Image 1 (cartoon, rainbow, N blue to C red):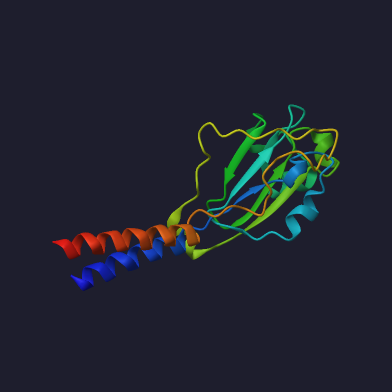
Image 2 (spheres, rainbow, N blue to C red; image 1 turned 135 degrees about the vertical axis):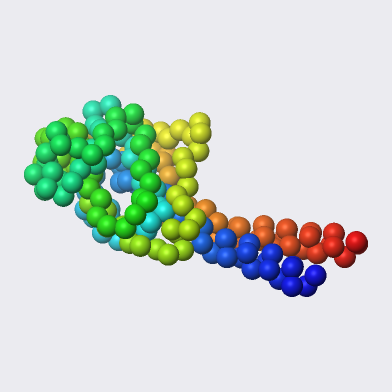
Length: 183
């Protein structure tokens, strides 16, 4: 009986440790916009397999995932994927470089492009990427101003799992032990 409880605890504990993926809002409060310094924004971030990129933008923009050559030349006609709904999430499912540009070539030439280097994270690969919440809406950033008072989640990321899952697992373990003690 004690071995079963220990095995159960270890399984939940391992899950709690392996499910910490972050969602990064591209450009923070400025969003995916021509006025955002995307190189500076990305410079202090560490992207891992399982993380999610959230692009929030106005109808003047779009998000195109491209290959390295298209990224360097701002070629917006040879894209891998194109999004234009104003609120795009991209799951980082494998390690390596990913390249994103605005579908407006002039915006891309003006610096509206982002290279993300995704690191392989053994823990995250077992958990998978979190999905976007159905019905979740984000306020759209203005394409004309960087209003820091606009309420948009920051890219410090949120953790799925981690300490919250550990607390829930411990509570569940204690409840299981109480039930087993009564049997």
